[in-house]
Image 1 (cartoon, helix red, strand yellow):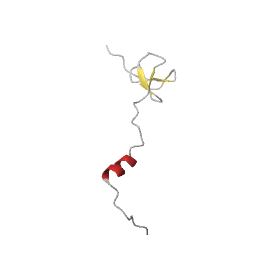
Image 2: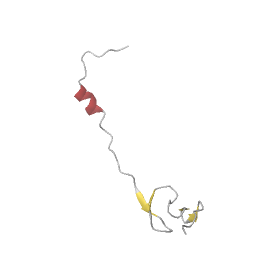
Image 3: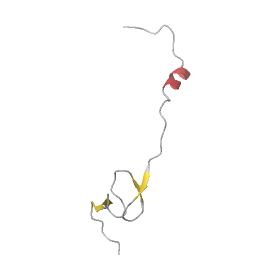
Image 4: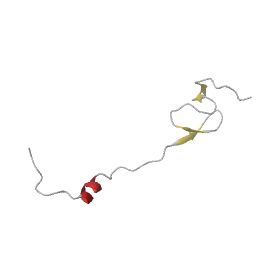
Length: 61
């Protein structure tokens, strides 16, 4: 098995690991109620997904 000839410094090691970029979650507007919703998720306000009811939400009285 190959072994390194020189020690890789912490700085050089950490630079190699920083290629990813943290990205904020993408929100869209619910087609039924207009609330902000994560992509590909059921709306937590009204329970609709792609314009159709996905789950039943109880109405607050």
